[in-house]
Image (cartoon, rainbow, N blue to C red; front, side, top):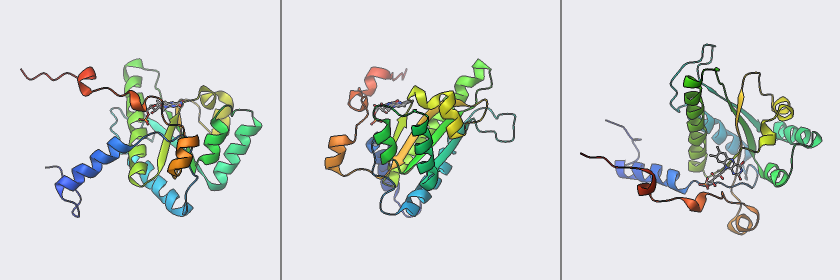
Length: 209
Ligand SMILES: Cc1cc2nc3c(=O)[nH]c(=O)nc-3n(C[C@H](O)[C@H](O)[C@H](O)COP(=O)(O)O)c2cc1C
């Protein structure tokens, strides 16, 4: 029996989970941490802890078995990160506006073992950890954006983000309060695949005999 929180009926629990999955969407430019930066940081901490509930199949052989690593930059840490990336000429195009709008930036990496038969599973598990964090932040009324701009995964950026030897780039995750609808329409930049989704019939099969 799968349990739901005591305070919700099973139907409300289902509706809430479905809504979080369905309504989450990419918000590239955000409105900083919002009116209560401490509440935002607490939400991010909880969401990263929930990211860690993602499934993973093989324990790594060091002390930390999970194949993902997250480095969260907030407050003065985010200001310093932004300044160092600027100084190193890493930010181009829309990235300055995206960094300016972020309440937090999380550098996400994963740890290949150099064994292709396992590495794809480490990567798949790490991606599901990212999605957990997005859903958890969405459920707390914060927006997110998964950016994979190659420049943010290169050696110069790795040094600034403090990425360790052996870690591979998974993405730069931006979190923050959503913009108001007018600003969102003007500068928010939605995900270009958001409206490209097809019916499940296009990519799934139902075999029942
Ligand atoms: C692995 C991954 C990398 C992504 N990298 C970028 C990126 O570098 N630039 C970008 O504009 N969007 C990026 N996105 C966001 C997608 O464009 C977005 O998720 C997609 O358009 C669907 O929109 P939705 O998230 O609102 O449903 C990335 C998404 C994923 C899953």
